[in-house]
Picture 1 (cartoon, rainbow, N blue to C red):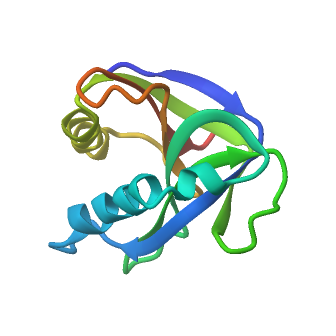
Picture 2: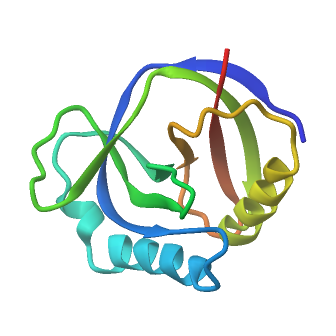
Length: 147
């Protein structure tokens, strides 16, 4: 799977989150429920100081037991106290460009990435959804790596 190496500035993401793990049989449901809550309950429309219109799925706070998932958007400053926030640290990332069905294409990409020999930092990996066309989505997937 092809990727490019990019350096990113710090990003602040605000949204709704939960903890899960790849070993949890309900992982897909947990993540899917976050996206449903974020969009169908209108949370996405209440976020102030949005930096852009892209939705973000952020994976952070990695431990042996799992990780935190945050469904949200990038903001220019924190002013959404009723929602969760996380920082995507500045750093070096492997950037994968994905096109296709939002659920299937992302799942397939992650399965390939897990099999790759990337020197990951586990400081924060994220998907950036560039449009909202469910079956023909353009997605950038960023994996934090060591320099």
